[in-house]
Length: 232
Image 1 (cartoon, helix red, strand yellow):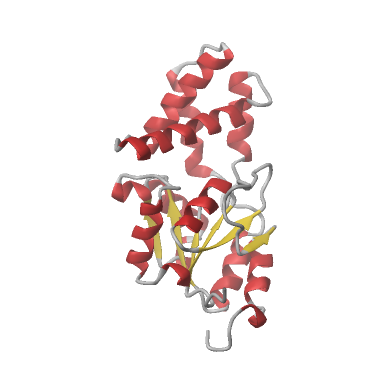
Image 2: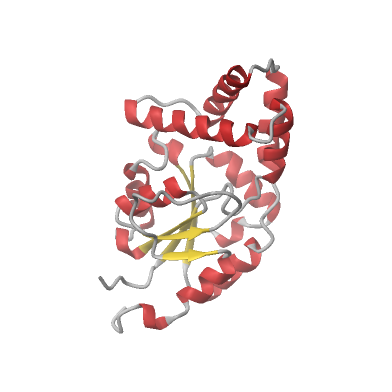
C-alpha cells in the first residue's frame, strides 16, 4: 500500500526525546536492584492501561507514585514518600538525547509540522521543553490527560490527529516504545520506531513504517522521495 508523505510528525517525549537514564539509576538505587527501574516502569504502564481499559482516570504522577509503592512491596523494600517524590521531581529536569535538537531541526527544515503527544501532564512537558529550548519546534504539545485516556488507547491518537486537522495516514507517530507504536498503528497512523536503550517492539503488532536509531536517521529516510507515490 502506498502511503502519502506525512504532513505532521507526532513525537512521544519521555525516552524518545528525553533521556531517562538518570531516573533509571535512581530507581535502581532505591530498590537496590539493577532491574528495579524495568520492573517499576512495567507496572507503571500496566496500570495506566488498566485505567484506560476500565474507564477510570488517575493523574499520571499519581499512578507513578502508586506503582512505585507496589514495586517496593514486590521487591521487599521499604521506601518513604519523600524518596518517591524526589525521583519524580527529576522528571522535570531530564536531559535531551544527544541528537534530539539536531534531529528536530532537520525535520523542521524538511517542512514537516511537528507536534508532541505524551501521557505526562501538559504543564510538566511544556516547562521542560521551554527550559530546554525545544518548545519552538512544536506546533502543539498534546497530553492524553485532556481526554482522560492514556496511550496506547486508539482514542488518544484519534484525538491528536483531530486537533492537528489531518487524516490518520497523514500523521507519523515517532516513539521509542513498542506499545506506543502498536497503538498508533491500530489508529491508522504511520509509525517510526526509534531504537533506544532496551526498548523492544511487540512482535504481534503491525510492523512500523520506519525503524531508526536517531531522529537524524529518520529525517534521512523521510527525504527519500522514492518511498512515496509521485502524487504525494
